[in-house]
Length: 335
Ligand code: ATP
Ligand code: MG
Image (tube, rainbow, N blue to C red; front, side, top):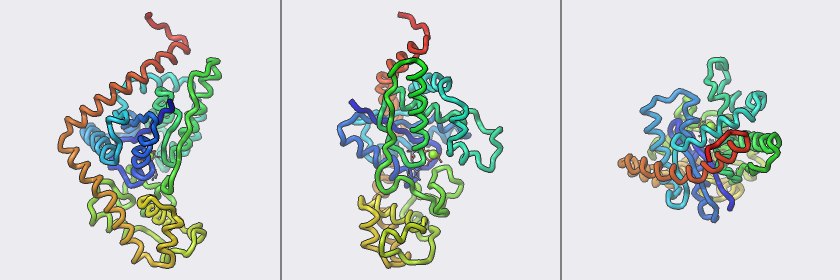
């Protein structure tokens, strides 16, 4: 049975990019008759400093965002990574398979250390893609719905799986595929059309948070950086206009249409028309999610219970696969 695995770091407020590139699609995958496993990757979050109390709140809030976006804990396995120790254990095994040079080539490592002294970064931040490979491979998951920015890490996961299979003369790990689908696989920053929208961007104006209220959403879109020209009459007119393309793609994804249909409706119109329409659409889609999130956040114990139950299901799948990898690598096990 094909298995889907994906995760999100509880490293801050989830964004519209996380929703369109990940959460919305996670929920859709549940309707395809495949097993879906979704994880709040708290072990990844601590590759950068997290205030302990804030990390707990962010983890519960991210769990609430999953559920509010339609991920149903009775149909999907939903849990936080650190409760399933097989992730960290498989991560170590794969640290010994992956090569330093592979990690060095990861564009996200370069982006996240840009302008900083790489020598002062955590070893975990450097090694994070090997733990991500473990997250996927410890379930023998083959389908990994992610945004465009994670494509390289899923490809690295394939390289790690292939090297393991080759070195140990086995076909133990199946090859996972990144699933990068839809019109919003890379939502861009509202302040800079060449940068990805990220929950860790220091500028709050660069992103729409799932918890932003209607006024904030309207204001952020109104202030979104664009060129002054009206929307083009055809799709080709967006080619050299990254900011305009971004807003059109967001509109398309939120309305479950393609960019062509959006251009057919708004081509030739100015920002004074399009931005308020986009803000209204975003509010109508996000408001039910944020109000459901705050309802769920009233009962943090219930969220913890859901994550605990999910972790138990996850362990039952991961543990035998971890044991299999340990055996292949030559670790003695009691029988
Ligand atoms: P951080 O800045 O902490 O890395 P992030 O916003 O990049 O936060 P992640 O937890 O790294 O979020 O990624 C979670 C999922 O959301 C991944 O599948 C990723 O590809 C997707 N994603 C993140 N940002 C975007 C975006 N701007 N557009 C589409 N998908 C995105
Ligand atoms: Mg990220």
